Image (cartoon, rainbow, N blue to C red; front, side, top):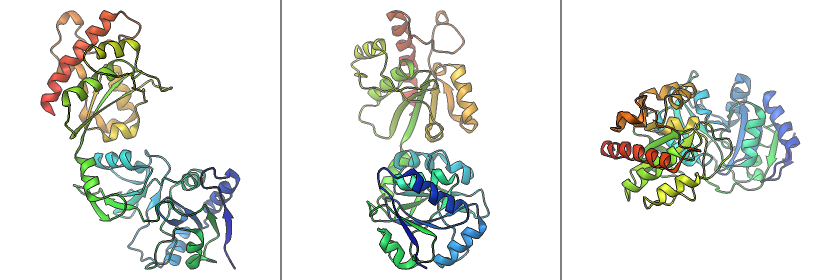
Length: 354
C-alpha cells in the first residue's frame, strides 16, 4: 500500500494538515517531513514501539541512537543532562538551523543528538506533536539523504503512514553534528557549519548585563564595554531586562548621556532576558539584588557567574551602601549622569578581568 502524500505550503503550512500528521505521530505512526537540510522521518521519541518500528525501517543498529527535533531553544535540558555553556553558545548562534548538538542524555543512552530545524513545517509538526521527535533522514542507511518528498518515498513508500510534501529542502545537505558532551566541542559530521565556526563561537566570552526594562542601566553598561573593548572580538557584550514585554528603544536620556561619551545607542532595542541567554553567558552582571533573585529563580545553575555590577566599583558612601545601582528612569538628568558614572567605574575594573 502506497504512503499517503499530503502537500503542505512551505512557508504557511495549513494547520489542519499539520494537526492530522501530529496526531498520527502521537498514535505511534511515522511521518516523512521536510527540514531545511534534508527530508526526515519522524516518530514519537517517548514511544518505544514507534522507535522500534523506525529502527527497523532505517535498518539501524540499537547502539546508534536517533537525534531528536525540538521547537524551542530552551528544550535541550528536557532531553539532555547538564548541558554545557558552550552548547548554549552554539544554540543561540545557529538555532534554528543546520546544527545538531550531542549532549549527555537523560535517558538510557550516554548521549543524545538534538536539533531545532529552520523550517516552518518541521517546527510546526514538532510543536503540534507536543513532544520531541526522533527524526533521522528519510532514507535507508547507506543511501543518499533525500532533498524532496519523492526522493524520500523511493526508499520509504509504503513503510511510513504519511508523507508531507513541502517542496525541496533549501540546503540539501545534512546538518553539522557537534559533540558538546566533551570539551572542546568537536565536529563529528561536517555540514554547513565548520569546526572553525564552532571554535570561534565557543571561545568568545559573553558578558550579559541585566536591568529591568533594558532601556537605561544595562544599555549604558553594554555600550560602554563595547567602546572600551574596541576591535577585540574575543568578548561580546549583550544586555537584556527582566521586565521587557514589548521591544522598545533606549530612553532619550540614556541616548543623550551616551552620546556625550561618543557612543551612538539610537538603534538599541530592548529584549527580555531568556534562559538561553543566561545559560550561554560567561559573566552575568545585574544592577540590583532583585535582578539577581529573579534570574536565579529562572536558572539556579548560573549562581557562580552572576554578580552585582556595583561590586566592581569603588563608589562613595553618599551614593548608598546597598550595592544596587538605582534606576534613573523618570528622574533628572543628574540621576542619569550619576548612574553612568557608577557604571563606568565598574566597567573599567571589569575590562581588566577580561
